Image (cartoon, rainbow, N blue to C red; front, side, top):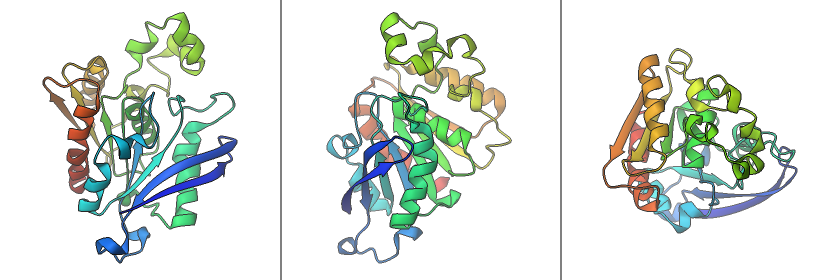
Length: 252
């Protein structure tokens, strides 16, 4: 694989951003243009950045074995939301970035070749992206993700309200706001979209996946849920789940 670091000025974020790409290269025996490869967007967690996928996991090797292109953006502590200090991270992720990568690298924009997954905060971002724009992705994944914001928004302290004001204002309408992924479940609109949600049974955010599963099953959505004993909110669990998610994409 070739590991590519791209810096460009984002209109939505009003600054120069970095994206990391892991792409098949000729030395590995790949000869097709990049437009013919499946693309997987990998979203990092709250205290990480794009490099964590390379530094802390074997995601690149797993992608090489399966012939995948990996796109790893960095979004600070934005929760992948718009309106963060004047910056629109959700629009950047779902609209600007795919368009840019299509133009510059020729990456496919076809739904059947695009997937998105993240851990923790990244699971929240992946859920919102896929459920908001099911026409853009064939499958999505959440590893220990905050896929239901209810537990967080109902116990916000002053520090959290100061750091995440763009979420705090949604506390009074947590059951209706489109910022809460669980409110976006629509089995009819998302009939061609599959989800893979995994969480350790000793994870502090386990309740989020449990609540999302209840809503998913009630709506008849096409999602798979995996719970693993003796696993916490850490890279030991996420590293185990990355190849499993990549294999899930072949089914999707």
